[in-house]
Amino acid sequence: MQAPSTLDSPEAPPAVKSRSFKRAFADVREAWDHRELWGHLGWQDIKQRYRRSVIGPLWITISMGTTALALGLLYSVLFKTEVATFLPYVTVGFIVWNFIVGCVTEGTDVFIANEGLIKHLPAPISVHVMRMVWRQVLFLLHNLVVYGIVLAIFFTSLNHEYRIGESSPLQPGLSWTILLAIPGFVLLAVNAVWVSLLFGVISTRFRDIPPVVNSFINLVFFMTPIVWDAGVLSRVTGGGDGDWRMLIAELNPVYHFVEVVRAPLLGHTVDWHHWAVVGGFTVGGWALAMVILRNYRARVSYWV
Image 1 (tube, rainbow, N blue to C red):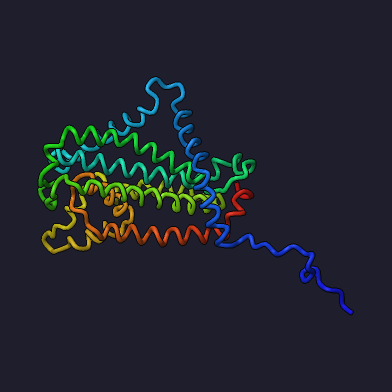
Image 2: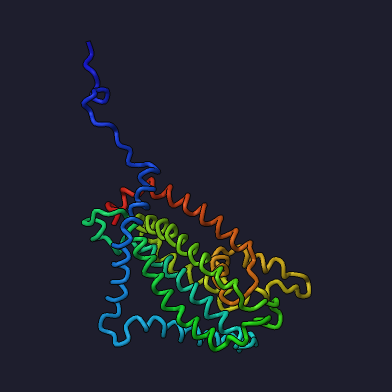
C-alpha cells in the first residue's frame, strides 16, 4: 500500500502563495497604516538636507522663485506676451512639473537608495515609496509660497477675463474654481505613488532604466506646455495644421496632469477632458502597479 503523500498529510502546512493580489494590496494598506513612520522620515529627509543651512528649507522656495522668474521673463520676451499673465502661467506650471519630475526621477531610485532599510527593516516596500512622495509633497508646499507671492503681485491682472497671449483663448479669471486644484493635487499625489512603485521595481531589476528616464525627462519638459501656452496650437494657420499640432500636446499625458492643477489656480477654463484622462491613467496605472507588485514584490530585497 502506497504511503500517503506529504502534501496530502493533514500535518503538512498549507501551501503559501507568495504571488497574490491579496498580498500586493496588503503591502500598500500596511504602508498607509505606517504613515507616522514615513511621514516622520520624509520630514527628516528635508531637515537633514538643510541641516547646517541658515535659512533651511526656504532655499527650496528661493530656488523655485528664481527659476520661475528667469523662465517667465525670458519666454515672455521671446513669445512677446504680457508678463503679468505669462509669469504666473510659467510659475504654476513649473511648480507642478517640479513635483512630477521629482517623483519620477527619485521613484526610479527609491528602492536602490533604501537598500539598507529594505534588508533590515521589516516593513512593506510601499513605505519607501510613500516616504519619497511625501517628501516631494513637502517640497511642493514650500514652492506654493512662490505662487502666493506671484498671485499677490499680479492679482489685478488675473481676477477678470484675460489672455495669456494674443492668439491664446480668453480665460474667465480667478473664481471659486480655484478650489478644484485640491482634488487635482490629490490625484497627482495618488498617481505619483503608482508611478514610483512601477518605475522603482523595474529600475531595481534593470539598472539602466534610471539614466534613460533622466535623459528622456528633459525631452518631455519641452514637449509639455510649461513655458509655452498650449492655446496657441489651436490656432489654425494657413493650411489648417492647427489640429494636428494640438493633437501632439493632447497625446502627452503629463500635459493633462499639469492642467488639472494649473488651470484652477490661474482661473482658466476647467476642461473636463483633462480630468477624464487623469482618471483613466489613475485606474489603469494602479492596476498595472498592482500586477508588478504582485509578481515582483518579494524579489526587490534580492535585487537591491
